[in-house]
Image (cartoon, rainbow, N blue to C red; front, side):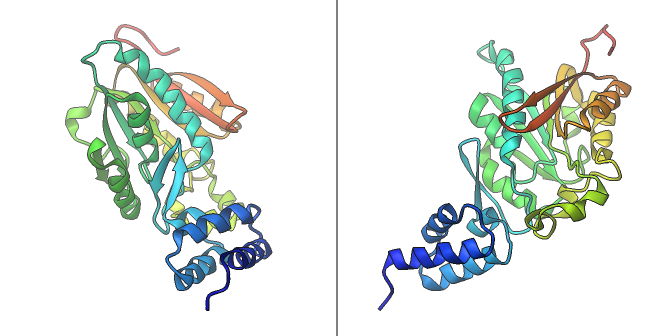
Length: 274
C-alpha cells in the first residue's frame, strides 16, 4: 500500500531542504506533479538532490509567462533576462505602426530560444531567426520556437542566411559574460550542469560581445538595434566596444530584475556614431 500523498510530500520537502533547496515546498509540488509514479519521483528527486537545476530535472522553465523546454546540460533561461525581452519589445512596437510591417529579428546565442519566442509572443509580427553553437540547445530552441521562426546551428552570424545582412531590425544576443576565472566561483548548478560555452565570456567576460559587436553593423538595418545583457560593471566597457564598431549606445538598468542591458544602434544613413 502506498503511503498517503501528504506523507510523501512531507518526506520530499525534508529531503530537499536537507539538500539545501531554499524553496523546498515549491520544488516538492513541482516534482510531485512531474513524476508518473514513485519510481520516477525517486529518480527526479535524486537528480535534484545531486545538484542538477530544477528546470533541467523538470524539463521546462518558466520565462516571460511561457513554459520553455530545457534539456540536461542546456543553459537555463534566467528571470533577469526578461528585462532584455522587455527592452526589445519596447523597440519593436513603434515599428509595427504600419499594419503590414513585420519586424526582422535575430537572436544569437539563443540557447533554448526563450528570448526569441518571448519576443514573438509579446510583439506578434516578428520574423524570427535564431542561432546557437550548442546542438542540444538548438534542439530545445527548435522545440520551443516551432513554426514561429527558424533556428540554425552554428557560431554567431555564421549560419544565418546572407540575405539577412543589412536588414535586421532587432538583434538580441544574450552572450556569455562571466570572466573565465570566475566560472569556478559560480553555483554548482551552473558550472557543473550547464554548457560552459554558455557561461564563459573570456578573460574579461566580453570576448563574445566583441565578436558580435564587430559584425553587428553589417547585419543591422540603418536604425536597427543590438541588445546585450551584461553586468553593471561591464557596461561601460561594452559601450566603448559598441562605439568602436560604429554603434551608438544606451545603458538601461532594472532594479526589479537586477539586470543591465546595453543597447547599440546602427546610425541612420548619413549620420555618424557618437
